[in-house]
Length: 383
Image 1 (cartoon, rainbow, N blue to C red):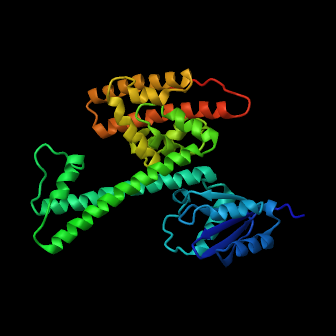
Image 2: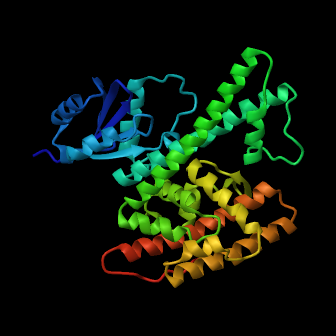
Image 3: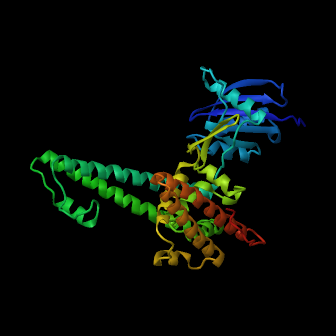
């Protein structure tokens, strides 16, 4: 049996896959094997040709084709990693890009250990993430539909009565009373109103589906979603988004790693004795960063457990609730101190959101370890 390791680079597209192989060893040959169709049969034949499966190491870039190929290769017994496209090394001055060259570069860099693998969600996390992102897309569509209607009314001088706030129940009642003399304009506003109503119904439908998905999720995932809601500003939707986008929080060795994954750590350019830090990197998960920064705004208020938050904390362990209470004091103090230093509001809330990720990590790790067979160790949040 041949025990030589072969490193396979795949440049994956919807219809085709460019294949390259790098033989083991620093001076091993790196060659292109051409193109194959992106079908399960063609992938199976490729593995049989290059096998045995335990001696293969395959990688491809994360992209619109998702993780279908990853699961196909895993079922065939092949070790596969999905790599981050933005972290693939690029040579300065290289102006030739083809599928074959990309596959060769992946194989060579994979053999050298220069690629960074991304987290591949399991079936439960991927399903919840699809639903969370569908709801996020629906909110964006609703915003666009509302803008079209409100700007149409503004363009024709139709303004709501004084004291009526936009998109409240009174505002919608007023919109239904607006009429136009021209039939074309009347048809336009009816279409815009129908789209607004459709977007609202779509969001309600998706949020109901999210409630059902959380109730049907594995017990460990449910436990983390419920525990995160002990934090101020983290309701069910935010907690579900965090779990769907991050997966197991315990896969991060420290809170700083989770902050880096969220792209909320400072960028840095240092050379010699000079050290210069810039804005946040924004290179992590944008969905996670968005919900955490939104949640951070709630910490501008003094620490307080309102009725809604108290209801969310019912049934949780005293250690979790104590950690959430500690978060309120610490983050509120942080918010005030940064405001007193005349920092811009967006920088203030981003800094608070970064520290909030630390509490999210601590709670998530504690719950996940308590759900694991045989233990419920205590956790201490590291400052």
